[in-house]
Image (cartoon, rainbow, N blue to C red; front, side, top):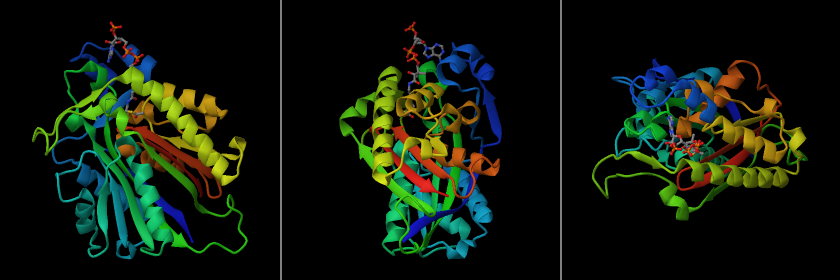
Length: 325
Ligand code: ACO
């Protein structure tokens, strides 16, 4: 049994905020932001737009792309660090909106690696027969946990949601580990000892406030490149393929320099890396499915392609997944 990606979709807040606009209220510039991060603009949620509304729109788009009715969905896993409410899970809001109540629906919290954690969890449930057709969503409104006075973090993030539909399917007997469609292999990691490098300084059980994102950017950068290169190497080895067999890498979109440095360390051609950080900034758990949906919609990622997903985020958490479309 394997989990196949049947469709993908995305949703962005209406409002686009450019670097110039931010430079009007913070001591920063378009030049600094583009040079250090590759970010040119981000979408910021307005009134009535929440993680839940974006997730619902992305889920609907993914179902339409897959040509699958919501009634067929028997599992919803939603990755977010910015849920609509402390509880219940935002996944249950999506479930109610789609009218598929009854099946399991829960949130996964691994910050920027959340989508990899959610996809790997859904894949395990599909392969073990606990579900047959899953919605996996990454949705965030990081604008609501940013300290808008802090130029070192406020310029880096944006809001949005991406979703995929995963369906369980038997694999033909004799299919090689790296052949045939579906999720071929995944690997997840966490290192809780690095908590202080990237965290939110609030929460229900500590301050009873939502809190703001705090980050030691330079140290995060250093860990990100090392951790990602290691997990990507492991996944490639586990699948029994060589790096040049990979058609596309869909990375978490944090910073163009992290994407370039990781690709270089792995010996991967830069033109195989899908980049949306310039348009979306860092949308945490939403960034991988957003980039995937964009590259699928514009025809770059095609059926049969071998695609490597990867992400790293607060915790630290990191992971990678190799998928044949
Ligand atoms: N505009 C202008 N100047 C700024 C800004 C800004 N927005 N932010 C910081 N600066 C200044 C600093 O104050 C500092 O000034 P100083 O030299 O006078 O003290 C100078 O720029 C350099 O600051 P650094 O933090 O050393 O800059 P760096 O080159 O490391 O770039 C950045 C900062 C972009 C945050 C980088 O470290 C980075 O991308 N780190 C990865 C963090 C990340 O992506 N986190 C996302 C979550 S984790 C993940 O997704 C992988």
